[in-house]
Image (cartoon, rainbow, N blue to C red; front, side):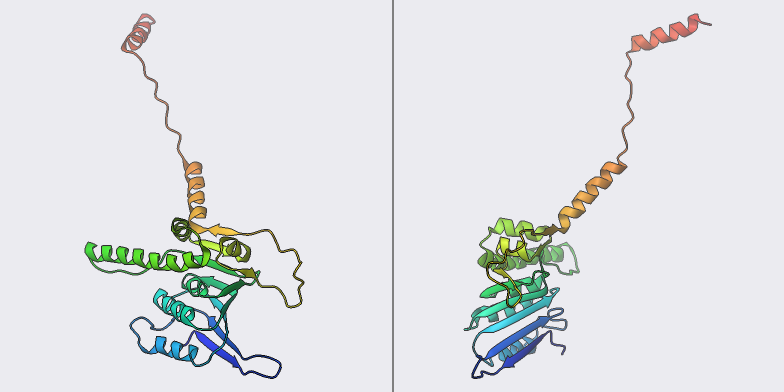
Length: 243
């Protein structure tokens, strides 16, 4: 089994408390997690093998939403504080895990992305309808995690997911998905933070591009001139007279 997580534990010393660090790198559950009793239990056993506060570093494009949901629940149920630090990307399912942090910090060069859940379905129209309903339920469950963390309305969160929204660290803090931007050790508290924030919507960009293409390729309709029968008759008579 290829694990997508790694623990680094540091025992307590005279000058420093015990430290537990969890690294989530790469695709979440690259191998089976769904319908697998071994992998979730292994993660839980390692999580519960120690005590005290935990720092979770995330750099993941996402993956299995079932695995993400279970990890989210395990971290939410953990007795100590869970500090999530995003140093690269927390996209899709990885963003759900990030919501379990007691505090969520993002590197100033990191990104977070949220979007609608996806699946592959096979079968007749009844099976397709079941898949659609299942995706709707999964989306609702994901919104629950975002709503608890951000306090945004479900309608707003649903719209952000529909648009496949990418956020830089400042925008994530602004919307409530993160609490702070990670500062370099030794930086003073009164340093002025960047005020520029970025939110990128794939759906909006595609729609805008399609509108521009449609406008560029539009064919002007030919103007048709309507004439009365009397006008046509007058013209025919005029031609006859010139013979």
